[in-house]
Amino acid sequence: MILSDYYKAEKLQEVKAKYRFEISKSTMEYDRFQLLLINKRNPNPRGWSFNFVPRPKRWEGEESPDMAITKGSENISSVYIPEPSLPYGYCDIKGTNDACLVVFNENFRESGITDIELFIGRGQKHNRKNLWYELVDGELDHELEFLRIHSSCIQLNFA
Image (spheres, rainbow, N blue to C red):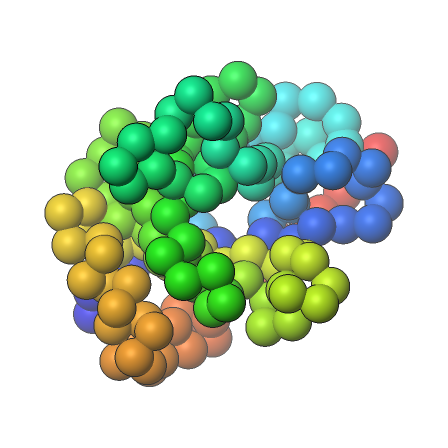
């Protein structure tokens, strides 16, 4: 398998933060990423979350990212969405050699992004765009489903 880790994040209505997503499912095996996502304050202390925000214009380049996964003021990853009509993107995890495929809820164009799935490919940073093509072509469907099935539900405790 190319993909090794899975995280599902949901935008919760109880949380009024515009860009905040809480992790609700995970394979719980990617310590580096989990340390970046840990919550130190309410809501959900000791749970995991991230912000999914538009990329500031000052970071534009020839291939400028569309969005960013952040925690506080720290950038975790710049997310590229090559085909805006598709619910897929790709990125890499800061400080690692790992790629990440990003999958949004199917109806994201009508109702906005409410669910984000992150699929990690360890050691695949330089292959991330090719992985995106494989994702779009359906070649990774069996790996995505395997990781979804083998993820555990995380108890979200809101104060």
